Length: 91
Image (cartoon, rainbow, N blue to C red):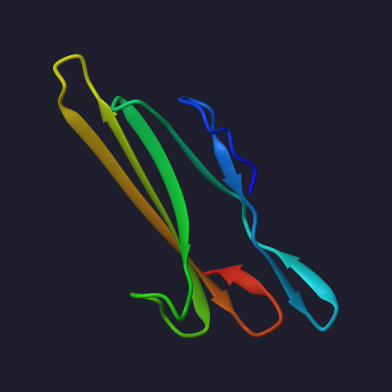
């Protein structure tokens, strides 16, 4: 993890799996926010996590931004990556 630890400065998470002495790098995750005005959050849901699915991991993204009238606008997205025990691919 590389942490910005300040408003508007992103933090990054990098997961690396080790299989038979081979390193497998998963997509990098980013999280950033500024006060109560906006945020962007990314995470993985792994098979053993709540809502996880066997032989896959799920990328989840959520964003929130407030407009000038203090109304929240949220966006969500997800991608599923299939895992075959040696590598992953986007479903």
